Image 1 (cartoon, helix red, strand yellow):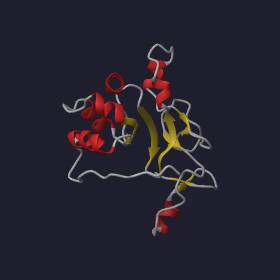
Image 2 (cartoon, rainbow, N blue to C red):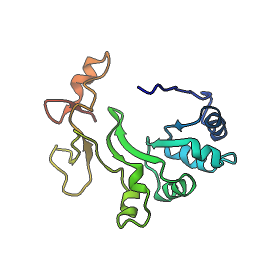
Image 3 (cartoon, rainbow, N blue to C red):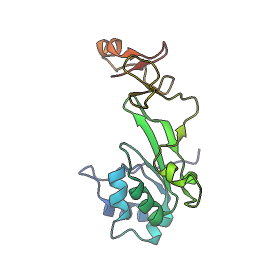
Image 4 (tube, helix red, strand yellow):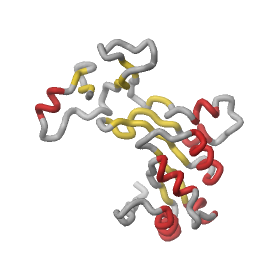
Length: 175
């Protein structure tokens, strides 16, 4: 409703200096970054108060982020990082750690929050299941996420879709 613009940097690779330059040009930027990209961005020589002020939110995902890297990002940027969790079959749709939860390092659960990927998103169930499909008693196993956020099948690959194990009758659970 407000209108938006998508800017795609040079595809040759992630360059934090280019992100800083583009942030100065376009302003009011939200930019997805993996944990490695975020660590490089907060260490960029051209990251200054103007770029920080124009950075709104950085959704971070694609890999686990070390608590120390998150602390450094928060120290440099303030609470602008949103840590999310997904899988290939449900990207960035399983859980999220809102940036507001990281705004107060004096909160009694701050360290636990840093080590988590937040809470299940609306309408999402999360379980850890053992190989036989039962709920894991040890916390080890496969993350199972049934529901509408999970893909309904592989595009143009019915054999792969049929081969996916089902956790319920709504969506496949993929190995």
